[in-house]
Length: 310
Image 1 (tube, rainbow, N blue to C red):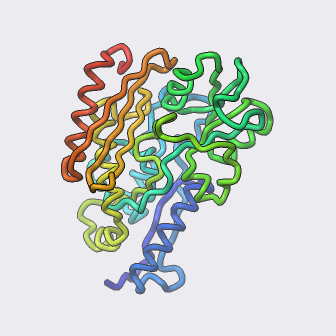
Image 2: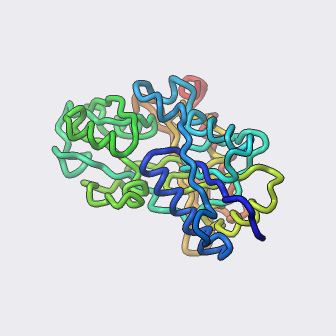
């Protein structure tokens, strides 16, 4: 296919979002030689409400959609052809007219513990302050360490690291995938195993959306899809959809392929203060991933009850 106009790629403006957009651009060029010409792919920065509002938790101001609504609008209006998202920030219900076309091969799913005062979470002194904006991290940490305190940490990776260095908190947690993509993995004091801190749904995965009906662009983007990653995150997103579909409830979920090729899904829902945590898991065929996610979500919804999920 020959394009007369540049392929317009939209993204948020944070250093991590730009690094992810550049990764997608490079992969498109690798897979499609006709895009190798200078200027054939244009990266367009789009300012989002989620990036602008830094003084409140996302759950208080509209949820994860604040990271994508301006990008969605630009895509529907034809200002951009494709959009690059951190899939953990992508709503489970996409805006009508927009389709999730590809997921890149998933990065490390684990959370990184970062502190100047302790080597591990377990070594933090009682009363220490954890900086995080994630209800998932908050609830799991307080469940294990109710003697700790949590303060709100919003902003990109660089902002959170600056707040930590300024002493706003004694420790924080960031997705290891983001640190890896920024070349900052050495900042991790410890890496949290999923058994100790279950990751966010779709953590470590980059998703690419297109306008429905834009078949030429969809064909270009679909060549980048890593099907094992798409299977895993689809199962996790089905879990989240069955539970809540937003960032208003502390939810963790991780689907992984076992050695025998079967899919193993772990799921968790919790109370914000960590006083209650409900967990379950499923194992089945990869083709049953979405059904496994829905079933696990339905079970946790029933067990947790309306008080946690409201």
